[in-house]
Length: 350
Image 1: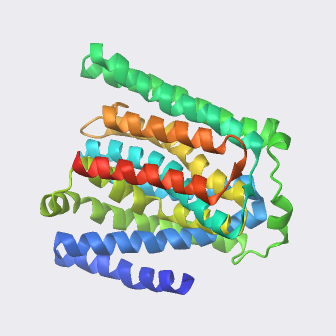
Image 2: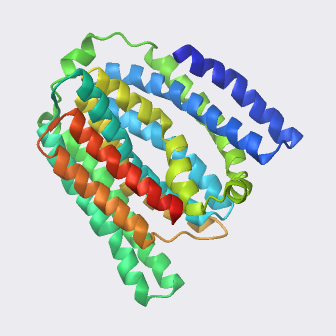
């Protein structure tokens, strides 16, 4: 499978370069860009997995989430540059519900088919639950509620203030988890991770990540230019493109990594990737995009639509209810997947 993704990258990226100069049709470029980004994401996943073996499950999960979200961050920045604020907000929504319901659901389901019951850190589950409630239910809903009585300028100022607080709290949380209280978050699978031999060395993994990120940036810019034509061709709204298409393509690396770790019964890493990525999107990526948009022609407020807020809040609360006990099985995974499918149908017809 790894060889397949490598071949995809070495064929897909040059074709994207050729298509950008020869002005191929939007449909061809859309498919080439999506496939190339998925291939690049898989290679980034291999590099971060090698780093995870060296660093342990906590750092490894954080690296997977960070570089997985780097792809989406790049796509979002180019979308902001093109004035597609609605797609950016929708893709953030898609990342949240995709990671919590699709990725975590598939991880629980596939891992549960092989292992009757899987365990992960109860301390992590409780820590993540508190931050999920803060990020989704508190920080995302406040701008929507208070913006009702504000003008556009007031909404942007409110969004900037909330964004700065969220980024500061996210960084403080990393310091809390990885430095001052890291003993409380020691994973039971750390010893197993240390026994594995990484596929690539630390230096090679870092070089691969940097080169792949640059390639993703180029391909993402071409992908963004196809959104308008593709939406018109298939009757897809900006909301559906952002919530489903961009979110799945942009997070392909961490999706694959989380599933692989769950199948190997390394649930601490799998949960850290899925839930950690969600927290990173909500508390760092989204606020960072608000601040980046200040440099763009059109500024992005941290204000989501009511369906987006309901979907994210529901996903967060359902995930908390299912994972708070530190155990998982295939039926709980199926429950999360069913919720994702219901929301996907709703966004398609909205």
